[in-house]
Amino acid sequence: MSPNTAYVNANDLGKSRQAISQILETAASGGCGTTGGSGKASCGSSGGPDDMPEEIWNKVKNHPCYSEEAHHHYARMHVAVAPACNIQCNYCNRKYDCSNESRPGVVSQKLTPEQAVKKVVAVASEIPQMTVLGIAGPGDSLANPKKTFDTFRMLQEQAPDIKLCLSTNGLALPDLVDDICRYNIDHVTITINMVDPAVGEKIYPWIFWDHRRVTGYEAAKILHERQMLGLEMLTARGVLTKINSVLIPGINDEHLIEVNREVKKRGAFLHNIMPLISEPEHGTHFGLTGQRGPTAQELKAVQDACMGGANLMRHCRQCRADAVGLLGEDRSEEFTLDKIDQMEVVYDLDKRKTYQDQVEAERQAQHAAKQAALAAVQGEDGVDPDMKVLVAVATEGHGKVNQHFGHATEFQIFEVGQGEALFVGHRRVDLYCQGGYGEDEQLPSIVQAINDCHAVLVSKIGACPRDELKAAGIEPVDEYAHEFIEKAALSWFAGYRARIASGELVHQPRGDARIRQGAFTAGLEAAA
Ligand code: CLF
Ligand code: SF4
Image 1 (cartoon, helix red, strand yellow):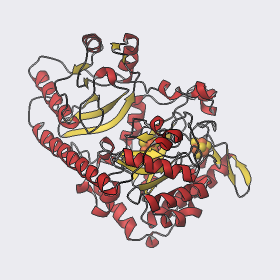
Image 2 (cartoon, protein in one colour):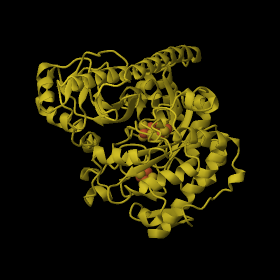
Image 3 (cartoon, protein in one colour):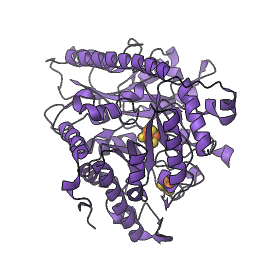
Image 4 (cartoon, helix red, strand yellow):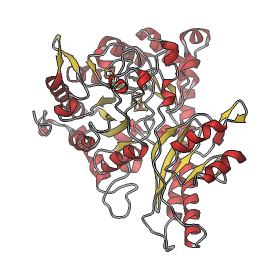
């Protein structure tokens, strides 16, 4: 079947679909962050209440994956209740987490639905900004439907304010859409790496379908048809969908632009293009056959080429199937089953609500600061009005520049231009500061990770890394400590332009950067 074929009659798609399509059209035709008359929307998951109907905003505003703004403030957790899988991906080694939604590190503890619910309630009572429970493996959530839906059903009874979210490869999806709606699962991620089975057969060696193992082109064709059908059925039922795609250089890089087009046509709310992780030590087919992952600029180029299509998510952390906390942090070690047994768990809905109201006020302040800063970075100064640069930011959350350079395990990357401050990704790094002193051996790898940036914004930085960053052409900036990120980035950019205009410096383009994969291997040795 052609990928263009509609599997569900467009006339059958109800009001919900119209609402979702409306958002997509709004974004594509301008809206937030559109620059320079290019007609390309840059809002992606950074869309806010002004960009979408209230009904949709209420679904995404405190989901850290569906709203870029929300991910600075709200946390999610995963419970590893779904060990089995019904397909094989060439980037997956079954010993480890599902690569669709989780990096290939070990799951510390597989849980029964009862244990999972106990853990979620314990986490939610300790972390009031934890708003979402996702089931994302370590296999496929819908290849384990009883465990997945039992967990959601029991949790709803005990903690009704927590949003439910799942991730799937899509093969079993069309058969389970009714259950997804019955249990009020408002957010579903489908991993779609192709809309052409000829591409798909290079990614999927087999699927288990209709009681038999199917291989090659036929397997990819069945998977593709099930994914498209499942997506259309969810859209028709008003469930928000996110599409995850793994970018595999030389296999589906340019093809992902077509994937973006096709999923947008079928009502996908977001498209998350993630880099392939293929270190040989993970033992995946791609890892063992030398298939490389993309560089930072290769990833950004495909994401940029998709702008104007389905809205893009760029803040994914490829988290573990048992991750707990803000995206980019993992507090799962604090909530092992034996530790939970020792905890006094009080699930206080009012306390959670009060805390979340405070978060909302902080978030609105961040939004207002960004708008004011955007308005300030306008006007004629004789410098190229289309100039854009990347800046790296060290942050511990709350949307602020509030982390010491030496304490950062990742930097958030923002693209700034006149009238624009757009989150475009993050880079994992090795911790520079080890036990109170700087680890100079780590510095070259940090520089490689942010080598495409003109500046790095931090709350504080020591003399040694400051000098080395400068020598590498990256400006260390600590004068915006504890300010909101976008305001800080735009203020620095205004100063940068002023220095160019005055002749104090000459703007130089930066090089490419490396996506750090080494951090993903932590724990593998322990599992071996
Ligand atoms: Fe989990 Fe996925 Fe739900 Fe988020 S993760 S099931 S949508 S709650 Fe988020 Fe993690 Fe990326 Fe997934 S950062 S891997 S996109
Ligand atoms: Fe692995 Fe997930 Fe693919 Fe299944 S769907 S093979 S668990 S990456």
